[in-house]
Length: 120
Image 1: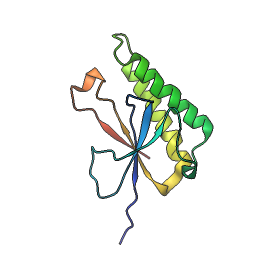
Image 2: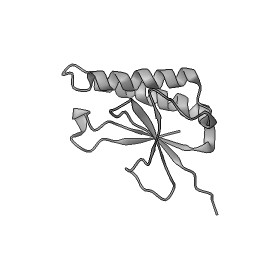
Image 3: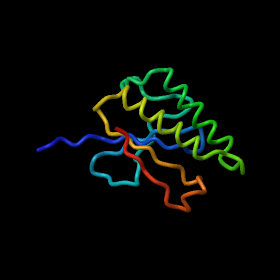
Image 4: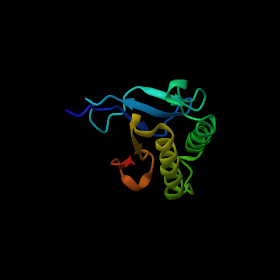
């Protein structure tokens, strides 16, 4: 029998720059679970995420909060950066967790049904 592992969901949200949640294996998509990282505190130390990557995530989520409602906001470019950050994150944490990127609900291209990408 395979041991199931938790999923870390990366998704920009509002407040103090929350950007990561952890979902236990019994909980189904699209739910994300409790918040574990934000622009102020970053990840707990035991996750082993570098300060440099946390800083990039913090800048990324702050950019979202500051510009999500700008008519000229480049969603395609911003989401591409998001996926690259998720790939860097997956490389840092290895196989201890699954990783998903949740496109934001605010992205007008998806009309209430934003995609979720599994990061390898």
